[in-house]
Amino acid sequence: MLVLADTTVLIDYLRNAPSAERLERLLVRGDVVCTTAINIEEIVRGLRSAERGVATRLVAGLVIVPLGAREGWQAGAWRSHFGARGTTLSQADCLIAAAALSADALLATGNPKDFPMTEIVVEHWPVGR
Picture 1 (spheres, rainbow, N blue to C red):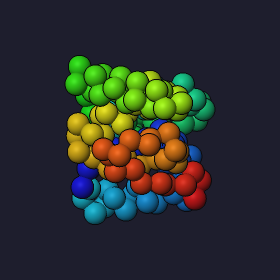
Picture 2 (cartoon, helix red, strand yellow):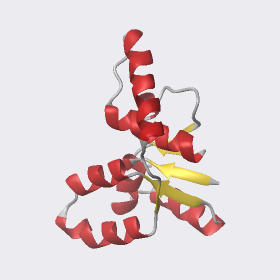
Picture 3 (cartoon, rainbow, N blue to C red):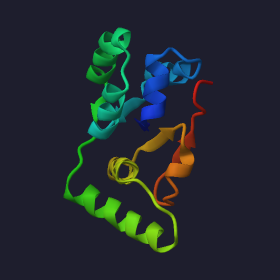
Picture 4 (cartoon, rainbow, N blue to C red):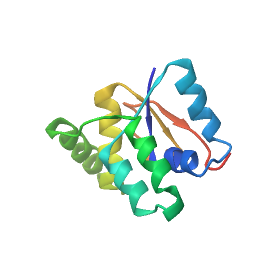
């Protein structure tokens, strides 16, 4: 299985939260964990100095799902669709969701409400648990 780890999941891993074991189990089971450049930027922006080495090793071990025109188009379509119905979605979250759709990956996140798109499978990984 391909699992796209959102920033909340990756931060929990870096900070050794109990939920980090869930990611470890995926890796042991042979599932492929991926993420996007957006998630990496979000992690780096909030890094504590002691986490830099662990973060570098984590990112080196992940598959990075590319973002291109197709994902940009899909993200824009979602933002337009939901915006017309009164729901504002962030550009970053829509691009992350579009990457998950393109890669046919399950999206693991602590913030499932940020991903209301029916075209993707979103799994709630509660933060810190």
